Amino acid sequence: MSARSGRWLMLALLMACGLGGPRLAADEDQPPQTYAKGVTRKLGRGVANVATAPLELIRVPYLTGQRDGGLAGLSVGMVQGAWSVVVRELAGLVEVTTFLIPLPRDFQPLIRPEFVYANGDWAP
Image (tube, rainbow, N blue to C red; front, top):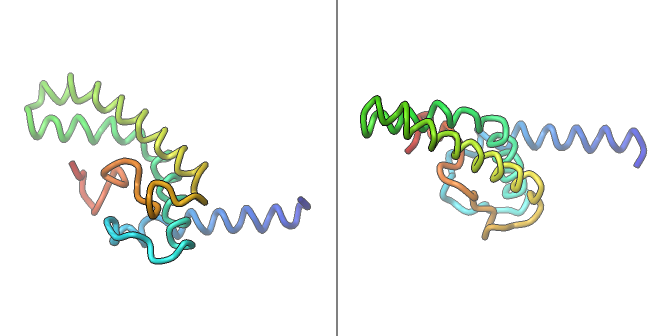
């Protein structure tokens, strides 16, 4: 591959990452209508999950504290949050490496919520 074609490939990947996340987040439970849309969403979701996985250390203790109290949030929530970081990182890496393959069926997300900060809120 020449340097010129490598630049075009990098530009295409960066554009796919930038367009794949927030703009398409509204149709979370709808299957992609085209292959290109599914590939773009899966790649963007994977990159976003790898980049934002550490936010699970804030999200999970917060949700646990809201549900079970502050002590539970600081103890159990932190352990669950650390585990959630690992799971979200791995799911993001799998989606980035397999973004061209429509698995799971119709490019559905591997984990829920699809993004750490889904629908503008810390979704449980």
